[in-house]
Length: 199
Image 1 (tube, rainbow, N blue to C red):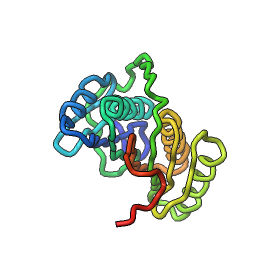
Image 2: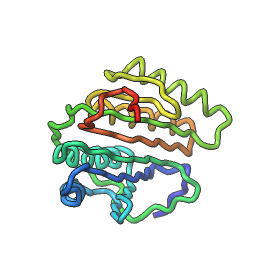
Image 3: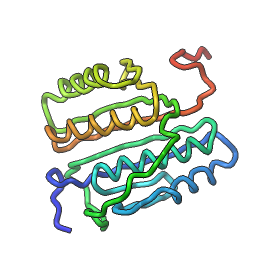
Image 4: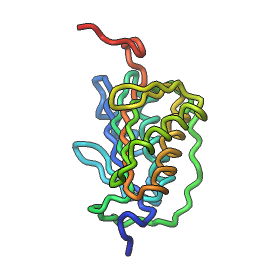
């Protein structure tokens, strides 16, 4: 596969899933094993799972892994990173042209909280791009959007959160070749939402 980083459609991601329960190993591995990896390069190790492929397949895979784990667990957290255009990236071997039927995921409606950070790299006007994307999220999404230190908080249905992450990633990467999104997702936290915890 002759692809140049920064100019190809190859997207990479990493996801680490953390179920807060005794049988966490089963929750994680069952989610990873049950998710369709057609058209992707998928590698799982002790730190998480790395995925490479076309943007829509990568986002679909990450979403499905998180939803499967979150559905099987009570309080589940995931640490997710999406990247495109990294000059040091090396694409693995996968079928870039595979067509996969869309999976039916009724659990997409679960309520999720997300800390979202966007990194348009190698561009002097990066902060304007970040502000534009956050404002767009506020204007068009069905989510509760709030500015926090070092991230933007998103609260709402899992489907709407992943839709926003993918849309912002696609929009920014069309303008800036090396783009990264980092997101921490949480479902079922026993803590009161948006309240500082006094220790």
